[in-house]
Image 1 (cartoon, chains in turn yellow, blue):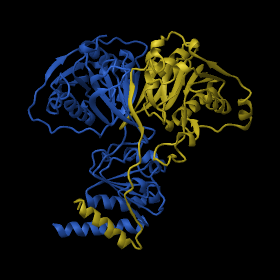
Image 2 (cartoon, one colour):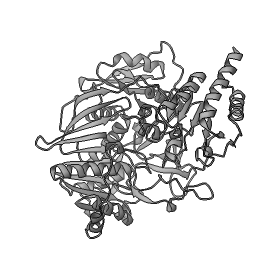
Image 3 (cartoon, chains in turn cyan, orange):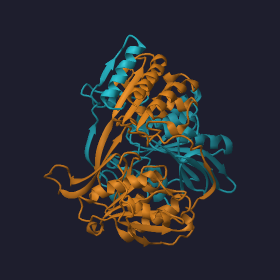
Image 4 (cartoon, helix red, strand yellow):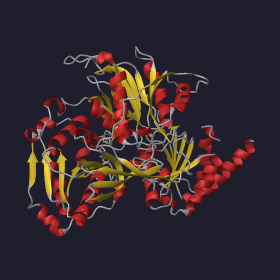
Length: 263
Length: 349
């Protein structure tokens, strides 16, 4: 069985977001990590490797420095890694991104494609389902559990909704988008880290993408266009008090609630 | 494609178990106000499901001038492929200028699949929608297009904000965050034009099979509908200690919600979680009690009208978004606050 996991390098927000003195986001000061939902997707694929000997390929689109997340995936146990990078792919919205990744995936054999539900920088959750449409595959989003029946060539997924879940069965090949609740990703092994830097990352550019027109790539191929973008300036500081006693604190809060006509 | 052929604001009227989701009514409210700025004033709801015609009148009462109904057994429970086929077919047939979909677990699957099928742009999780010029200011290098949908969305856990347009493709599609747009006051007895449409459903390899549907305890409150939220974080200390928050919420006729840490610790169900991976809320009053204020949490509550934070750590980032911050021990303050509020309310009555 062949599994391809699509991963993205994103800035880390966990250790707190760094701001510049003007209140805007300082991206350069934040670490780059593998997107959490994608990492859960990779872990799910690696479990299929443990269970069925599946071959796991990781694929990312990004700047050359995105090589780092592919190395991390190697260190966790991925077998092959592909970096899709090209200047003409820059500025892509989710349509152009999914067109690009679909163009790369058309070169590969796969039974199952796993993507994260969404990336923590864009939060769109669109690229996974859009890839599935470009490739005419069934899609199951928001996966909390993934089971594969290799013989029957089907997957069974626990698909999360707000107030319920569905157990959904799809024929392979198909695409599943993973929630970080899916599992606890394994750590890199010391041997794996060592090997990760020996292994070869395949690098593809525009010319390696199959059956995609230029009009669907990069900034020019993006139907959505940014009219205005700003790092949101933090909300002005409100009041902060440090009362000496609980009574004082209560009086302060009750005073505000009364002033605002809450009580 | 000729962009001029595309007219009118359409909304996807999400229903689950033949009950309209709140987001459907919220989208109608927004669609109505957007349509006022467009040449075509008619607002259309697209209702997909099995045996759902009974929902038409409610859509009319909340602002739909026309309801396109695709009623077919294939649409009984949400599955990506038949719903995509239905909605994409409606777009091909009726050519909307704008299509709004809720940013729900259904809409965030359906929206991208449909936008890919009809080849148009989709902006995710919008919190504000307007009609205006694109580019916003006249530009020497590109023609200004009037009456475009300007879609504003937060990204990066709410730390950046972008306004996005889709000038060259139709429909202009957006998913819209639940709980943000306002419903109109229902117009009793309003009727909509009803158009039945069925594109035909033929199973193919993209069809999935639902083996089981498990509804999870929905006994919990709808925190997005609450006017007052008393929200607790890791600092509350234990599931048992949430009792003091329950009491405060009760005194204020509010609802208890929580941060992700609380859900991860198993103290409260996921339905009560506020934040990036939980729900976005915009109550009139939000108490953040023992919540440090991680960016992912703040993203889900910063639009609240009044935010009051109680935390023992004076450097907690929650104080950066709080209107009123109190540094102190929640175990002492919260019970005393409940008591005082009860007294104040009793004195009033």
